[in-house]
Amino acid sequence: MYPLAFPEEDLVPLVRGLLADPGVVMSLVATIKGEIAGHVAFATCAVEGTNLAASLLGPLAVAPDYQRRGIGSALVHKGLEKLGDADVDVVFVLGDPAYYARLGFRQDSQVQPPYPLPAEWYVAWQSQYLGAATSAATGKLAVPSQWLDPALWAP
Ligand SMILES: CC(C)(COP(=O)(O)OP(=O)(O)OC[C@H]1O[C@@H](n2cnc3c(N)ncnc32)[C@H](O)[C@@H]1OP(=O)(O)O)[C@@H](O)C(=O)NCCC(=O)NCCS
Image 1 (cartoon, rainbow, N blue to C red):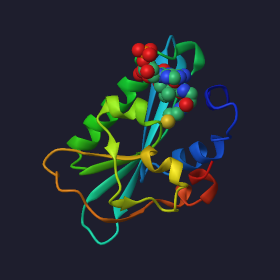
Image 2: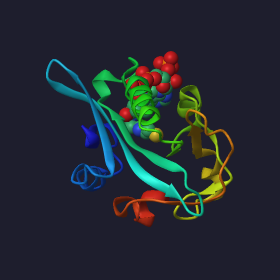
Image 3: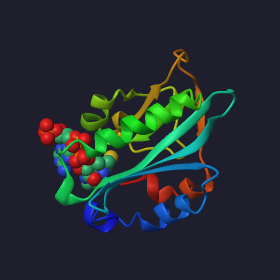
Image 4: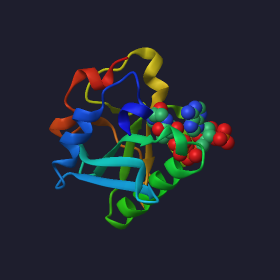
């Protein structure tokens, strides 16, 4: 499904790496008639210098035949609900703000991603605070090893 959803980017090694590490990754799958229609991963992170429980959303993909039916949104909503129940304070994502703003994410210029982003991507770096954690943190996001690849953070 990933090569179909992302024909120009090979995210399969990242997804395999994340799935191999259930201790730090929450993975949700949407199925239709036994077929995988969508997938999202959330990885456990930390904001350096704070005691916030943080998570990084990604990747998110919906099979082309099933796009624009609410599956991506449902996967993200379910993930945020589970993370909130698990007392996660804040979730980060690097993605299209036109899509993620609808899901409650806002640009974050206080917490730095693990690698510097090109200026045109600043608006794509977003966060959403869950539950009672409302004061914005400052610092750098520490991500698990699967995300420590500069190629994943550059055009
Ligand atoms: C982006 C993606 C995960 C959204 O999942 P989805 O189940 O299709 O989206 P939803 O049905 O929850 O949301 C629909 C809204 O998202 C936007 N959207 C969804 N897919 C889109 C696409 N391919 N192009 C542009 N906008 C899209 C639209 O605004 C759409 O609303 P509309 O149909 O009323 O115009 C899915 O389309 C996908 O996998 N795309 C290819 C991979 C990708 O770009 N992933 C990047 C995530 S940052």
